[in-house]
Length: 555
Ligand SMILES: [Ca+2]
Image 1 (cartoon, rainbow, N blue to C red):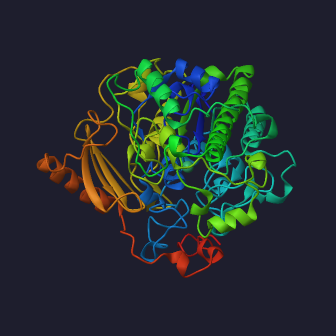
Image 2 (image 1 turned 90 degrees about the horizontal axis):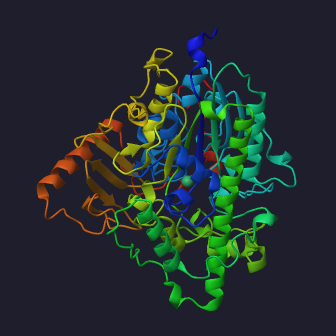
Image 3 (image 1 turned 180 degrees about the horizontal axis):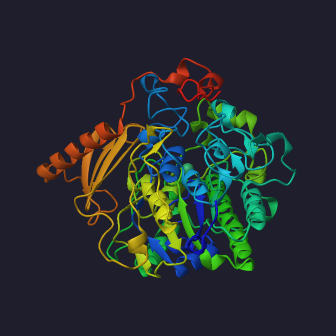
């Protein structure tokens, strides 16, 4: 296509995602973890305090890429957690389905160069990989997580079928260099793509770190960057974060610290060995985040050297709250298997052959001031940091007023790019967009809210359900962290979700319950049955579905 002068004004877009990083980990959100490049980015644009995602990796990514609700985009549940009655059902296909278009598919058709480096997690079979979904150049990790080094070891046996690195459609898992580390490699690849990008057309670059997803690992020179920093224990770190968040006005000065779920041992009840291990895990987690920031900085430096930085809209986010789970969570792992198969000795933690996670107590610190963590519908699972900066975006510091959703990212980017997503493809209607553009608000053209007090955002993952409406949140918490009960919270007064108001506000409760039912029906939610599909087939069979089963003519 021939580009006119108007086209050349379209901004570049760099979308950066980190994996399982909690709300208050990075510096611009109150963390002690050194993230100078994110701090600088926040100073150039704004931090948004009310940004909601799903509680798991792939569902969030499906909405991020498509602008559609996850139950319509193919991630109604995250593989391999399908109940038998959900398996291969519309909206529950597992990969990102073809009833949606990705940001890259739309922008590619508009003359953008489209590049991806990092975690995809939206389909590993032909027809579903990033190069099939609009990206010109791709270096992708197709699965949910793995060793960050060149051994590329899967999180568990059931993850093996999609644990793979691909480069432009070719499996390169067996060719990773000896010094491979995921975040370093993603930045290297993105720097390569952007170096080769022709200067006279805009680009869309998707840099999706697998860090700080477990296994917590860093290259040797990063291992001891935080030595001793977490010996003070959970509460001291939490209180320091609270104080900084208050100073930045991210939270109200009167907000009290979160007492936590009570599910994990207190610091003072740990023995010396346990304390040392706990502290070491958080040191590694922090080093992983600082390393990601360092790699983000390398990409920024390239854009500055190319004279493109000021023409690039940069969006930074995490995909869900901090991870509370230990390595044996990933089915069919067991504590015994982890013990046998990995070297998690103190000296080897964070190195190749180790598999350690930060655990629940640190996850609750990471998600300060919110409750709970990844996998749950509480704010600790579904509210994440968001930074936006770039041309045409007002420097507003901190915004705590706008209620935002991950499906907003596609309409926002397309709005800045003067592009529109088609309503159909090959004569088939696409799923409706769920999100809305932030552009007028980000540009400072209006102070009117992106969502009014009557607008609803719906959420469901692993049978945790919620509705956001104005200051209200209706939440249904399923086991293991809930008892299949509804609660009603006022997030403005009670962001920690401690006080259930459903008995005191029966009308509001009934209103939001009806909103949930309308949402569930409109997106095609299928309640999970008792039987898990993985109980009846092997992981290889589970992940073997192709475009043929889905009627796409892709084999
Ligand atoms: Ca994640």
